[in-house]
Length: 477
Image 1 (cartoon, rainbow, N blue to C red):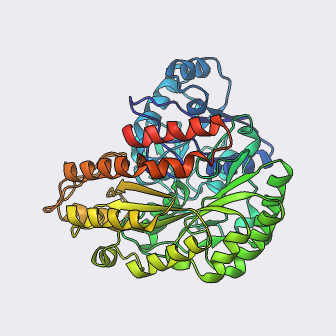
Image 2 (image 1 turned 30 degrees about the vertical axis):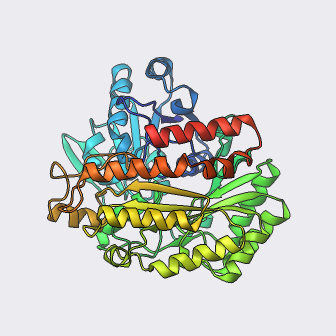
Image 3 (image 1 turned 90 degrees about the vertical axis):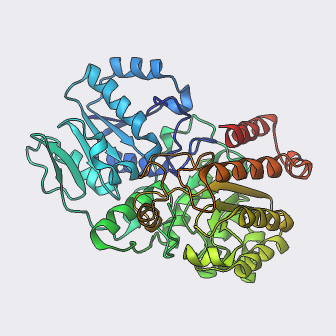
């Protein structure tokens, strides 16, 4: 059996969806190691697996259709997010144009929530939540007549949608294979925050224990969370790989020649006990790296560990410096704690990317946005990323926004939070938020001090070109 993972080109007239974080249009390509874990598991089971990414290659609809027309795969797999749903629907229609009965398997947060949107016929299967073992069981039972025993699966049968019971969370992440990165090694991925390559991403845990009402974690953990919350009414527990298993993967990547790694856990930094041995490996091999973390996780000890191990960025979700807003969104941290964490990072010369999210609360006003911007500038952090909150279905914020009629049009529609808002508050309209976002981005990224701070850090003209291209997409679509 030949199983081909496809990343369709943009077929909806917009920039391609970013399928790893899952909530924005593409700024710069990231390896989707979530689907590569699934690919590795299938390879491990003896299946012939291929991987075709049409966004990276040339994003051409014609090339995609020509590939489909002549392809001999038995099954196609697509990782779907909210912003890719229309493109993925059109991709299925192109496949159906040539192969009316070829099976298509869709996974990811887009179809975990909007399950019916892509169930276009009886040969499309939706994998809800964590995909690995549901996909493996489906493929292992490819010739079955009845799929009702496969947990986490949805499918059409005689025109009716069958939603099988949810699959329990994976108990031991160490049992999963490492991502099948050999499928993407021909593409030189780069990260403007690391400016070194070969570069890849690593995931050491799934989900986050905190209760921020608006939060859409990475696309894998959001799929996991949507499915678990639907059945259990609460967030799933955090699952983590063992330190030994993480080190084993890092040593493999180092042997393969990787020089830069971004850890894409929702919260990579938990305890110094877990962090230290991982950082010792990174330090030993002079790997440049970065991660996402909460400001209140940054202690003096953590700061020292980061500095010693050549950490090149910490991605901090600050959202706002207004304590009333932070309490409303259940951030679990106040502005003083955010400032304390940032101060420790600054003392240890760790570059910070500070994330500010406009409109997370009806308490937001033009004045609170401007005050947060002013304070962010005063901090002198390496980078500030401004976005507008979206009421993503599956979050507590979605329920609140819908109940209060804050969503334009009455319900969620996929929107790029880097540019647009579908929210409108009594004291702050969607147009005001979009204007503030654009002004903040222009003022921050086009400051001479920002340009001078970063331009000297590029190792090559190629890296500089990639960063400029990403910035253009961020500022102007």
